[in-house]
Image (cartoon, rainbow, N blue to C red):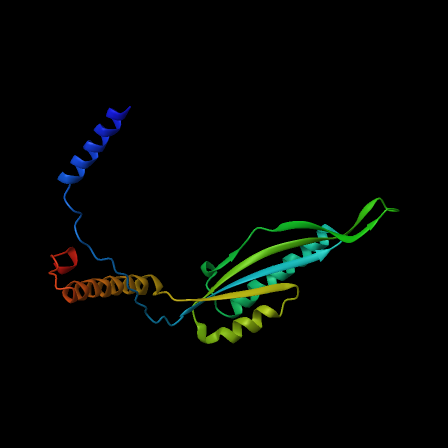
Length: 186
């Protein structure tokens, strides 16, 4: 047992004696940002129609969809910029449990649909907002976006790489070293 321990110790020592030191390196990070001015608005409308009779809930939902689509036509939105989602139907029950009636009591069907509208002219934001909130039983969300976001993100990433490279070069020179050529130098 003692000879096995000594042999492995000698092997490790010999291995360590012949290994070259790892190359010296500096790790840096940097960030860059670009200003983005929104030139688009993405509207998400969630329409809810509620009625005890499912056919009446559907009819109310159809009227809501019709009103929203009429609003988009009035605002000159291209049909390709309007997307209607499939309807979902839920049953709503009262929260009170009735032992006489044998459980929770059915209240109504709730029919929900989502409509997504892409607005290409943010100058008319108030016109869109006012037009969409006229319908009752609706949740209105919006998101500002830019059609140039992908290009600006790529530009910001490139600027961050340039800044990190300059920072690394400055650190090497401050330590009295000499930086080797990298892909960024070429």
